[in-house]
Image (cartoon, rainbow over all chains, first blue to last red):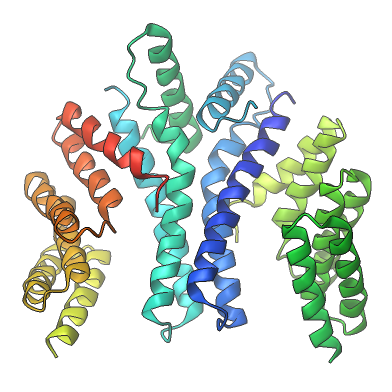
Length: 88
Length: 88
Length: 119
Length: 119
């Protein structure tokens, strides 16, 4: 459970990037885009983020039934905190 | 330098996701998209991947001038190998 | 015309949300939710519910936010159409994290994580 | 008409590359490169060079691949237009990694990494 706040922070970190890049994309495309196109780029942005986050997220949620798994999960958490600067 | 192969594998991992999601997006959008739109979605997919990878990549390239940094860099590498299944 | 008003409410709601004008955003999404239920448009209904959840969440009203994020899941179940569910599980878990209920947060994050690889 | 042939060569090249038909891909990109130089279109010229690099790289011809990936960088310098440079630095570093020259790979990855946050 110690890793739960890290999951939240990592999600927020990725979402900020996703929204910023999506906004840039939409402003390049102009106002005349169809709903279908709008939906497709939104799905694209979510698909990339979700699939990239899947591995790290999963490795923050090992159930810790044996101590080695718990240690590894905490190491993963520390590494993610460092690499994404999540500890602020 | 031990971390160099991990950088390569992580890049390849992310690129596979990017291309797969971009293909899905383009097939949803159909063949009648403008070059501008095509370019915008390509940039979107690269922008998200690059910005998400920036932190981890940077933390695989600490110069290791003091031992603590080197240790941390190797811990980051091990965590990334685990979380993205890069050790195959 | 109702459909048009619905779409325009969603759009202004989103803009208010973006500008952190959270109470105004709430009002727009609330009107949109009623319109969507009126014209029986479940996709837009989910967007309105999600907007309501987001507006409340950013105001720190986590319990109320959970109510609306859960509504997204209920609509998905009712319609058998699951767009927005991954995000809803994640948002509910975020709210429970803020409330300090890490057990429950973990359960919702597990649902969120198990859906990350699907579309 | 030359411009049209250029675009069509690039497109078939990409399809061959996708289907791992690497030698055919090389031929298409080679023709595209010449056409692009002919019509002086640096953007498409870079795409052709990058396609050549990718075709060779996937065939394990890393030294030759580096030559074409470097061409992308040279065109960028010549034109003052840097699209594709981040990717080129990364690809060159990947090739040096394959060749076991980790020192040089690291130097190119550093350039790649320093560009990841820009557009």
